[in-house]
Image 1 (spheres, one colour):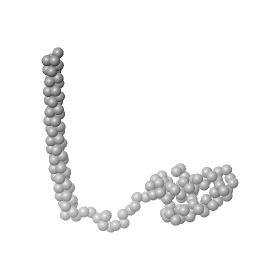
Image 2 (tube, helix red, strand yellow):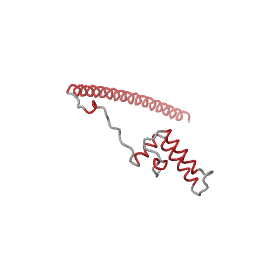
Image 3 (cartoon, helix red, strand yellow):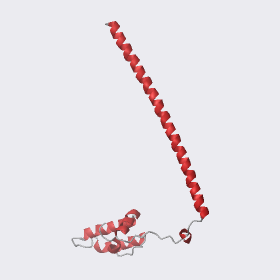
Length: 148
């Protein structure tokens, strides 16, 4: 939407769903096409409805807030989050990452081994089928030579 929905509805950016619906009802009473006979009443009514729907849909509201500068990333008020890790915590994290990396590498090696086995199996099957086809074609050629 290209208009600021909060200003258009006359509400604050921190308004809840109930406040948004109430503001929409009050505004639409003034501009509803059945009540207001002006030419742009229907257009204004549709814009109000669009503004309300934008603010009631969380993803749309977030896009709107970012577009018009209302969105701020939430600030972490937890003081523990601002503290640095202790050497023990850093060492534990490093060990965990190393263990996961080893497990990942083992899994990738097993996957590659299984892939190679599957490819080898398919090659053998393909050779078997090709050999069978060669035998059948040779038999047909020999039969045709003896028959004619």
